[in-house]
Image 1: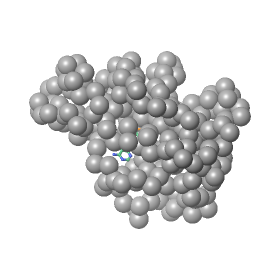
Image 2 (image 1 turned 90 degrees about the vertical axis):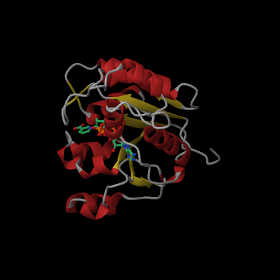
Image 3 (image 1 turned 60 degrees about the horizontal axis):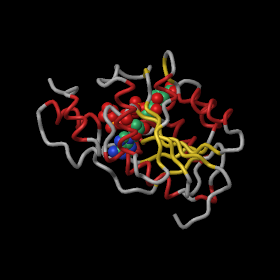
Image 4 (image 1 turned 135 degrees about the horizontal axis):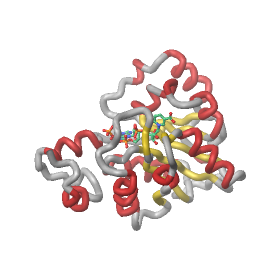
Length: 214
Ligand SMILES: Nc1ncnc2c1ncn2[C@@H]1O[C@H](COP(=O)(O)OP(=O)(O)OP(=O)(O)O)[C@@H](O)[C@H]1O
Ligand SMILES: O=C(O)c1ccc[n+]([C@@H]2O[C@H](COP(=O)([O-])O)[C@@H](O)[C@H]2O)c1
């Protein structure tokens, strides 16, 4: 972390984390290091409106995230969405965080596949104004398929992935190698009794839970 950061900036990485995998951790570290962020909060979603109910409970997914980031400098788990009643929307989370920390710039990360569907997100245009958005490329995701409006959003808001470029309303692409990990693949492997060590930092706990066995 050699670059200097603006006085106050907080990294945010929301996900279902059903379960958390090595790709999530690599992304969180890359967000921290690329933008010289003192801390990055991983926020497991409670009840997602946009997808089927996760297999593991919110509390279980939070526990795994906590264990996965233990000992990782600057990475922490945030339980606010797990505690929330009703559906979890990112716009609510960012507004809540901004109200708690008015002087902090929120630097929030999503994968390219999530970005592709941004127009379906709750109050998505407001969301763009709430912080600096960072988008990570993902294996299998083809940028040329991005909806036209989102292409325009990217064109008009895109800045370098650098601490000095951090600014509300801007977007950067995270300069990381493609990371071939997904929770879907993990769940499939666990269902078939395959070895998942190396794919998730909490392999033993996840296997012991028996939650993904069929
Ligand atoms: N390997 C990856 N590369 C880039 N982005 C990723 C990767 N894995 C997850 N993400 C992003 O991280 C966020 C949280 O992802 P999530 O917890 O849903 O994991 P997932 O692997 O996509 O899970 P699932 O397979 O169950 O959909 C999303 O914005 C997603 O796009
Ligand atoms: O706010 C929304 O409408 C919204 C719609 C889709 C996804 N999200 C958030 O995006 C993050 C990644 O979602 P997922 O399904 O890929 O784990 C997670 O924090 C979700 O709560 C948020």
